[in-house]
Image 1 (cartoon, rainbow, N blue to C red):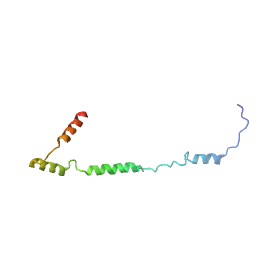
Image 2: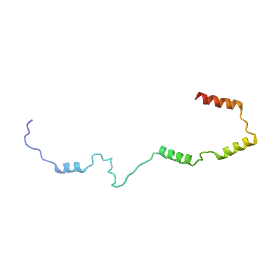
Image 3: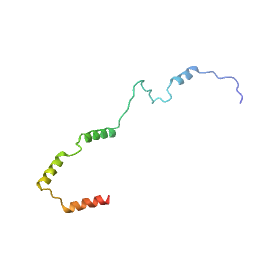
Image 4: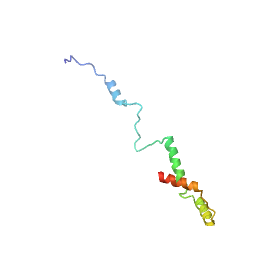
Length: 92
């Protein structure tokens, strides 16, 4: 390859290219500032987790109701319901 002479250097054009960011849509992050965005779906999930965590682990009202029925002798279980429940447990 033979080079005959040199074309003039356009210094302002070169400096402009160096000053211009490679990707104009990408912004430089602010120094010392982290940022995270949470999607609407994640916000819903956070709210559900919060609501569930506020629920009691044991439904004390139901336990007390059943305890009273058993103590008084009024607690009756359908034999069909019992058989279905046992069958489901054995199948799983």
